[in-house]
Length: 566
Image (tube, rainbow, N blue to C red):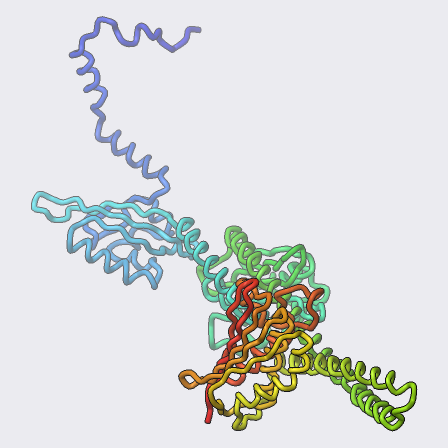
């Protein structure tokens, strides 16, 4: 047996001339028309595009089998403008407008639209067409392609959807608001029904959200909401698989037999049938290895069904949603812990203040006894003990009052009893009361004011503000004079307290008015860090504001502005 392959040296004669080569090339270029037609048909058959031709776009459409295979309809059903019946109703007006403009201008055009496939599902297509003109410039024929761009459009839409979902889910740390946002987000973009089951505070799964695309189904929504997410002895119920095992479920086509398998009683089966389920998927909400709930999406609209790609997308959405739900859950638990702490502090403050009154009475009794027996050898010791006890009593009372104020502020129960008050008079009274303490710091309190400043404020709360600011200035003022200035400026009373102490770093200035906040270590300076927090709360309740101007080592100036109400 000999090889059919020729010797390379014999394929092209060495003596061939350029003319003979050109003739040989031209002879190879001549292809019979039938072969060319067959080649084009073969190319169209293997192409991912649908090719079509018409004898005038207003007369016929659908020349090649690809279009008919896609729609499932014979050529006769696609002639004229009948093929537009297979375009999605929302897209048809735009398609007709583009067709009319292209026909009027006799120019090439392109248009995106959703086309109903033979299985009833709408697929995104990109249609392109060019006119073939006759000698007179009229349209002899239109030829074009329809390209399946469903995956591309779906990827675009889903990326945009996830971006919007991320913004929406991260916009709030409120737990219930996050759950509601997640449920509303999916309907009708991804589903006709959305059911959200989550882990409740008691460790049991509860049905938190049910949303339907049809507003008229409110009564059915309530029925679905009333169903338990964990029916007994029903391993085929998708939410059960997700909540107990963390397993996703995809049911592309929901049959009545499947509904009977999922239902745990006749009432449940009736509700499932009334919902008109055609396709269903359920994905678990997982965060940090913990099952937080399950997201169930269902379709009732003909022509829509879920597939594996939809399941993967739902899992991606569920992953992002689970993180937001977990953050909201942690925030809710933290707020609840803070509420319980504040409630405890309020109760503890009341309980701790109860023995302070009899203790104060005991100290007064001891002081009277010492005064009644001045010559007693124990009199000096008693007086010293009483003085030390009263000092500690004042500290305890201040701490208890501070904790009570924090509880009132946190619960929004701060009440103001406004009356006509002279701010300068309040300042002088507080200065007189704190002068003995200022003497211990060797820090004189200097008041600068031109005239009384009268407004409608709560006197006792105003005394608290001045006291906290002066206490703060004495504590951190490094023994330098403290200047208190009272003025009126543009309808506001202005109180400024300036010290020349250690100062505050700029990055700390924004947070020192928060509860329990400190700009320095508590090892060097005592207190609970509540004075400035209470000051801000009172000033804001009065409709004013407080701010600080400071730098490290350059002292601090606290400024309070209160609206004048005369």
